[in-house]
Length: 303
Length: 105
Image 1 (tube, rainbow over the protein chains, first blue to last red):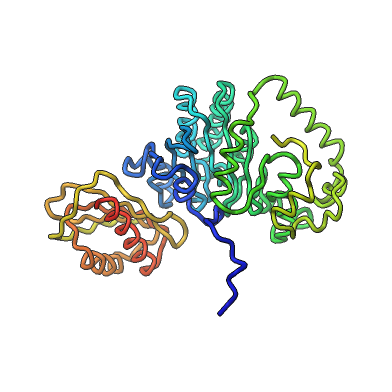
Image 2 (cartoon, each protein chain N blue to C red; image 1 turned 120 degrees about the vertical axis):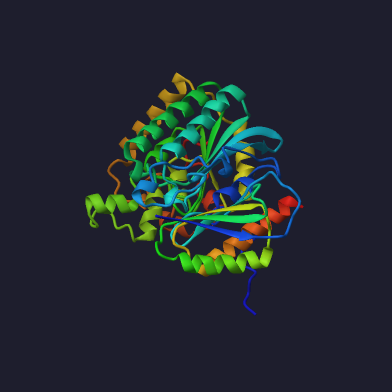
């Protein structure tokens, strides 16, 4: 018999579908879908291009409870066209955020997994992203926390990378990736000498969960377990600070300091060393508890 | 894209459920299957939208087997397919039916 003792128990967030993530993240049986598949609100742009559509257009939205608190939730399905944002997909997300302003839930949870704009829908997708950002900021301004959860196989890139960083707080697993241009895009446009997208260690040192946590862009780093995401989300809702001019100016200050301190760095590990972390090369191999212990007190921007 | 429609005379009934169930994800070699109640005069109707053209006969064979297994009347099945193999189609259909029957009872 093989030794299976090292296999982690629980439900992998990374491997779950968008729908499974919702059902295991929220209180059981509390999820009510809005604009469900039976309404067949699918993309009108894919059929003429010979592409199959999805009845959800790659995103599931609805209402539910998190630890007894009413929340609105959206979950992007990376498996469908890389979680890309088309016109309908974006409109569902915008509509959910606008609904939050009216309904005043305890929070909006965005389970982000997307390569960004769906290029098949070009301008409609780009406009959708800007509408999502505006709706997200309006939601935050009305005092409703918006939390982003990242940890799927497709990462969170492009326009959705921007949307993620507009959230009040982000929760990520080690497998999660967050960025603007994804590794393949950088390699294609700048050349393999600039960035080798097949170098997985490099990719994770640059856009991976641990690095994003160390830079303070993500507030919570958790195990790849939906229950861990749930616990983090419950904990973080109460800690969110209101959106204000002061908080934005503070963030601006942190970002300009970061640019001054690390702008010349060539690699993630170089930044970690400059942050004063001993043996930065060892960070990628650590499990989450040892990692969090090793970097304690070094991270800015945590709630 | 190819759009196919199949209809089968079925005699089996089940408890009424208003809720549609959806299984699977539309991606390369994968598909989504939605099951809904519908007033179809004893028919089971299956609509397939697929990116793989010219496989109507294979769909017919796979769906014959599926309908023979469950024989449920007044059922609308809608499929968006990203070029799944017959084995994957069978699996998803069974998965969708399992969920559907769970909700219905």
